[in-house]
Amino acid sequence: MTDKPLVAVTGASSGIGEAVARTFSAAGHPVLMMARRIDKMEAMGLPNVICREVDVRDRAAIKAAVQDAEAVYGPTDMMFVNAGIARLADIGRQPPEEWDEMIDINTKGAMNTIHAVMNDMMERRTGTIFMMSSIAGRKVYPDHTVYCGTKYFVHAVSESIREYLANYDVRVIVLSPGVIETEILSGVLDESTLAAYKDNKVKMGGGIGPEHVSEIMLHAYQMPQNALIQEICITPTRQTY
Image (cartoon, rainbow, N blue to C red; front, side, top):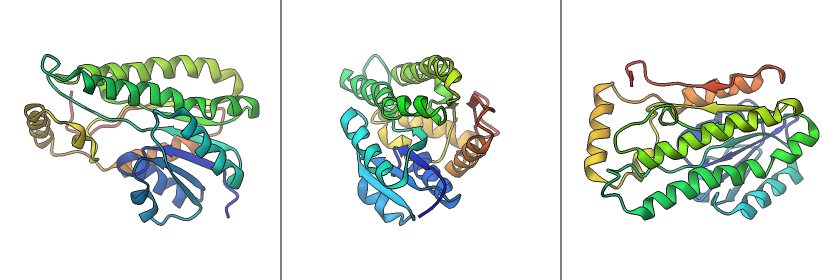
């Protein structure tokens, strides 16, 4: 067991979610890891971890997972609202079903995740919520139309919830990473869009590791509760757009 508070992560089976689970675990925190691929989470073998197979579109499943972890480790002090998908494509030929998937996971899933912990954090008058947006939530890119829309949504909701929770001493921090070495491209089914993305990535010398994101998140989390880094925007040095 550990005397540090519980942290929870959605989309914890890979990429930034996995890196955050590893970084916070190494710092001594028990971790609730949630994702659809439970085998990948369990294979990490982290100590003081509870893994749950969760689809963030299922509000009840998130709440149940949080309750299970809190029964063992106490209240959730940090929630990383991370699960998302990027179906990038030319908007004129993209199947609308791909829009639905991004909207349901990236926006409704985010709200479901917040809902699982917000009221309890308000009652305890402490807690931190990290919201996964993107640099695509700050500006638009070709073939990112609906994806950008979902990330602009995350930015808007985060600003509103940050203001709402401020008087309860609960922090809301937005993450706006650029090109990070993750599995994000696995969600891109449009071949020409995928080729263009990979070409731009090569031009900037590749992405940066997800551990750089998780390390700066840990720093922001470890600040005193009355100190808030409102947004973290991290990109490769050569990413100028």
